Image 1: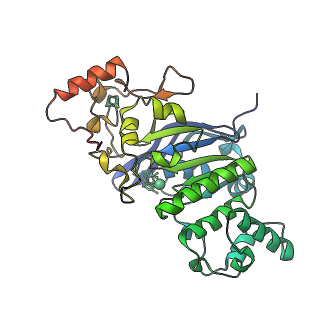
Image 2: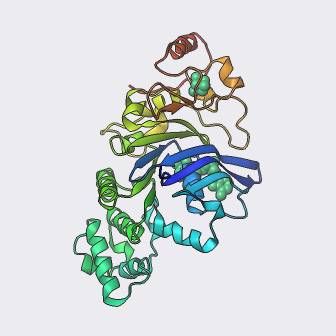
Image 3: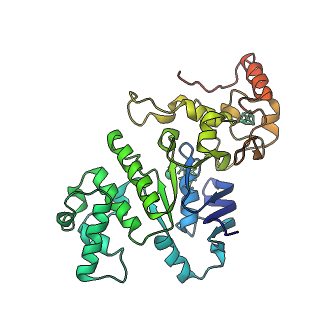
Length: 346
Ligand SMILES: Nc1ncnc2c1ncn2[C@@H]1O[C@H](COP(=O)(O)OP(=O)(O)OP(=O)(O)O)[C@@H](O)[C@H]1O
Ligand code: SF4
Ligand SMILES: [Mg+2]
């Protein structure tokens, strides 16, 4: 059996800070199969970008405690690869698209040059022709004219298309898109997501889409991984996750999917309270202070990820949604005064 494209096993990425050690990614495992798309969902600070940066080798060296766990790509343990091979891998075989296209683009360099710099081995007319082809393939009109322009002359959506073209320049096997549409107008968001999905299919790539909005990955990824406070709390094939969420945090995220008539950037206000401090998250379930199903056990014992009844579905919760234990806990909670509850708008 061939190895999955990417396997992350029990990854811990911690940072040294003045306040103590931040447990940003705390025992995360993840598998991405060939040509598969995986959504990673969680609110701000849950460790999504740190996970992506750990995979890409983009961690600040002096602040990062030596990451533990294993990241393997095509069966090779990245920690064992020589530095030259690693540098080739990142950018060529694993590429990344960021939230703000201007962080990936140099404002004082023409678009054509930025693209041809992503095309080692090509120069002159061949590099130019390939740059035009790349721009055309991501839906940029009049690509020949764009080569001579600077990033500021493009709209946000067009700039993001350029960064996608740059990320695809070396035909990566895995594309990691970290909130690729959060900085864009709502109308442009769907176009960019559809473009990414089209390119994934065309190029037979695998893709990780990181987002705080479950609505972004709905119907677009094969599976979804939900992160909370540095941990994976639920994972499932996309359809299963939407139909039968087990972890109360996932349920709350589902209810927080913005409606079409909501103003932009109001995503998770519907979940009351805040995640725990990652310097000292304390014992038990990290969602306990915000969970309407929480019981005394939740403050004492951390729930492990365990399999649900359908294949590929796992969740970490003692009183799961949609089970008799969960129903009893939610009932008990309604009678318990003073505990913070998730307030979700209908
Ligand atoms: N270099 C660093 N040094 C110290 N702490 C860090 C560093 N980078 C990230 N963190 C902390 O790690 C935690 C996870 O951050 P991360 O950026 O991965 O969150 P995120 O899920 O991507 O959130 P967002 O949706 O806001 O992008 C946060 O508490 C953050 O403050
Ligand atoms: S019921 Fe308990 S274990 Fe489950 S999410 Fe709520 S606090 Fe965590
Ligand atoms: Mg982030």
